[in-house]
Image (cartoon, rainbow, N blue to C red; front, side):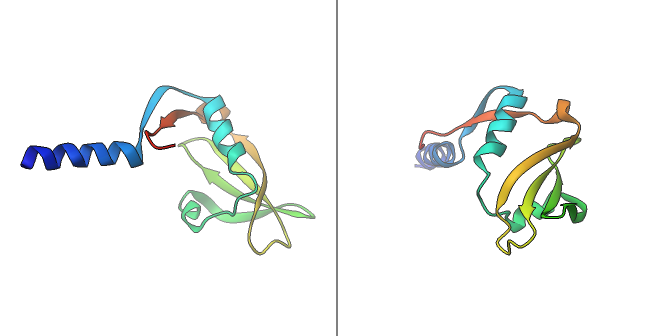
Length: 109
C-alpha cells in the first residue's frame, strides 16, 4: 500500500512539475523570454528584481531589471502609461554568457 502511494506521488510530480533535459543554453533562455512578451509582469518576479526595481529606460518606457539566473542581468521593458505592466521587450544588460536555461518537459503539454 505504501509503495503504491509513493509511486503515485512520483508520477503526479512528474506529470505536473516535469523535468529538465539537455544542456543549459542561451537559445532556451531566449525562447523562454520571447514567449513571455505580451504577458503581465508578475509580483513573484519582483523577487529577482535588483535594487531600484524599475528605472526609466527612455521617455516612453520603464525597465524592470532582473538577475536570473545568477550573474545574468536583463530587463523587461514596459510602457510608462501601462498600469498592467505588460512586457513589450527585453534587453540583456550584462552577463550574456550566464543567461542559460535547460529545456523543461512535462508529460502533460
